[in-house]
Image 1: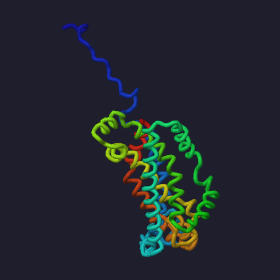
Image 2: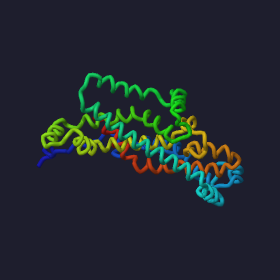
Image 3: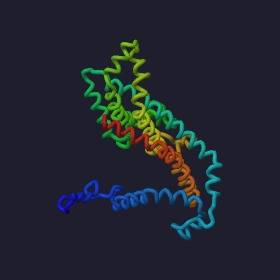
Image 4: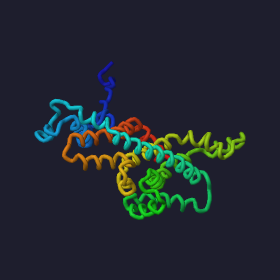
Length: 290
């Protein structure tokens, strides 16, 4: 065998146009910087609750030395804190149920039924995304007051459901449109009514989108501050965001205890979001594909 007949294999080129298979180190560095900037305030608040006021005054950015758990124990022993947790939980759960139920029914009609004003109705819901609650807070307060719902959780639950419906419908309509018409025809041949098809087929198939809008509605209600600030005036009906503001005003000189109260108030939402983060991403991805 001569040298001219020996085939020399071509040099392998790196995949992805010269990029490393695990990505660019600069990208990871930038992501770590962004994550650090986002988590640093949260970490400061949580760790600050384990410090005393003297430690914070002497070294505002230092670590607890020694660690003090008295601030957290005093907040956890407070009936005011647990009352505000209960109010926030009731408002968030009822808001989530209302948003999911009404949004799913409205999205089903817009996605599966053909009528003359369907496009106009869908555009109306889409336009609702351009009007945040802060823009309509004054007329909204007047409406709630005229209905006699001030100082009650119903006064914040109903507006939260109304303002969450546009985003809910925008997310759910693509899910319901993606359900094949042949599936509905086969169900009708088997004797399934439209209502039965909705409960037995539509709801299970749209569950990723339903979970997504439910999580978004829950977190938005839990973190809502502007609406409760206008509607709720009695401390017995305060939600956690208002409770944090009232607690900070009452204990303005006790910075460590304020940090402990603030961290405890945001931990439930952080845990809830961390558990269902994949559901949110998966639901939004399905909505875009639909």
